[in-house]
Length: 500
Ligand SMILES: [Zn+2]
Image: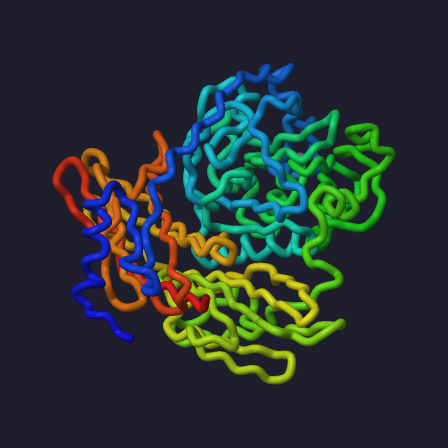
């Protein structure tokens, strides 16, 4: 039975009177989406000073005149003593955020979510600021796709949107080593646990494209090496592996092969490992990507990194089950204006099943589009694909006068909690941002105004989580912001399609 619209529109203001920013449903049986109380900004861990590297610059290998000096990358030994932030990643997929936006990092135990880096501490500097990556959108996409491929068989997700939940690693991409006071010959640097070979959760690793040069392959291989250092991989003398300094005629990928450690000549491996097998160590440290007993699921098209036109975007998923039948295929998708969680058998998106192929059609794709799929089989197995990113038309750069609002949505915990985490990075060229608001429109068209919460001192982040009612359908939102000089701006409208 339909209820009068006026009553429904009252819900947010009634709840406001009732106290704070918790919005409740108007009565049982008529669920509405509601905004959750602002989470307190997470407290940044105390930045315990690490001992400066001794001697300074010791991680820079000796120059080899036969090779371009710029390919050199290093690692900084750090001590894992339990005083850093604790992330329990047992059985959980690691996430590595490729950061092309630059930013300021302070020194301390690695905690990417709070921009704290042991490499920065190791240089003896309190903080460093890195510039944005000087990559075109198309080159960036190829770079992201290449790094994703490097890690595709391991349980490591490479993402280009900053995750909302702490515990991820961050690969900084941009600038020159001089930002860290390092010689121009250093192409990248990362922390490593030389004694315990533990994974450095929250690690911040670096590559410096200004030193590495314009080859996307070289930048990608350097990023693979730096990220893998955080998983305890040493340098090795196998030319086809990204952990090497040796030249190789082709593209370097992690090899399932024992190799001697060293930069230009053999030396002992860290942690007294007799030899190093990159694939074996990454498999042990990170785990393999898919549950071997679950359904096999993969994205067929479009190809990762493809440049397409804006508009209707068909996405084909191939899913099979060895032990049962495929019960459900779900697409998780977002681009410059859409966030979608859609079942092939649902109502959010057109989807056609043909044998083992499930083809979704996203109607109005625009900008950078990122997606993955999930399949469930009739015997309870679930697997997900890796993430692909394509460019649908031109990227979008929402410029709204003095104020710039960049919006992202995190649906990562939606399946479990039905929470939609809205994040905005808001900057102004005039004064400071005083407030930010989400105007959330639920599936019936009722709009509520919800203040956003500052993500933490020293960031330009604002957050708000919305609890979606257990009703499939379309939602949308706009973020508005005001600065201290009286400027007001609103983002474009973003659409969220939810099948559950
Ligand atoms: Zn290295």
